[in-house]
Length: 545
Image (cartoon, rainbow, N blue to C red; front, side):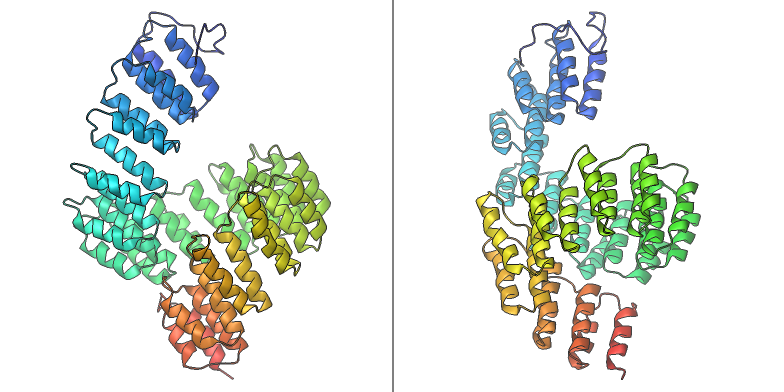
């Protein structure tokens, strides 16, 4: 970037030699937060025309600012102009390139550092880990002279996020010193992958438990639907923060116990926007829109998430006039606001109004387009769905998934499968949602072998790891086809702890097949929460004449 002069600084004070570096540092840091590239270049011009143009401290901040503004080219220019970079210079530049996904350039910077410190090592390792290149991250990690607890924890988290729990635990056990963050990271890894037993064992052996560890354990019970144990743990917590209260409110709201959720809101010392929004959503989902709006009016402060929740409450319950009125009175709108209203019109068959709102959107984003495509298909307008798909940007996998879903809704499974080839031609690869659509379509049509074939293609051809939802689709079709023994075996051997959807899918299959044999009893035993009465009620209904 060549700056000859700065005739118009857009409201920024003119360069004045009396300003100390701290003045410019404040401007640069503020711009790094706002991430406004145009403003960043104006501030850079100010610095160049000041007496501090060669100040290394300011140049370090400029590199960081350009990194936050996603302009690596400008960051590189500033870096090249520093005559004697210090360790802070190298670390800031390395982080700027790494965080923007320029791993090879970040690697060159790292290799050019005379004596990289722990910050530099951590930056390059974390960069590779975040971009799912665990092999390279591990290779660099093993070369690090003295990995600190931050490095160890970053590697553990990276392995856990890729579901490599064995490697994550191996690193955890090898750690020479473990702090509470490392313990919590390993605990969370087990919890997020459904291993409640290991989470509990780790939690009980932790030498020191902070609020983050308690909340991680609370979330573990909540994720597996263990409401009684979640509440029991909540009651024993030595200290609770807003995350603790909100999670407990959410746990009750999700099972439909709104009265208990509301009682917790009243007891909570942390009655924040999130807590109110959870209850507004719960009331709306149970068609209690008036109660939701009453709570909305009582809120001491509302953010755009709360407005969107109330808008969705009206929209999902078919109150289109109230939804439009809410939309018109919103102090600000985002893509979710627009999408919610477009979807409301579409779901209720007002396709003309939906299309009109869609055309008015300031940005027709990757969520709204698929919503309208599927809405057309749901109302039997497959031609309009195809036309919208063809007209709008097809660079997003979500649009392709929506069109695939539309074909399936229209009974045109083969046309949907043909989209996989078309995606490859366009240079796009299917994702997990793509295959979930395909497996669901095969399941509803009873195409067992076709379902099995695409389940295998996920991993073998596209290197996509099936999630529990994909396994449930396979359980569903096996049950529909009367192969209950194989469905039972799949539930017991899949790499996930069976959840409520797993056993309810199987029990529903038993009901369809008029079977109440030993298999149903055995699968109910896999329920993660033995105190949860729902599976036993279903089983009772199954065996009762």
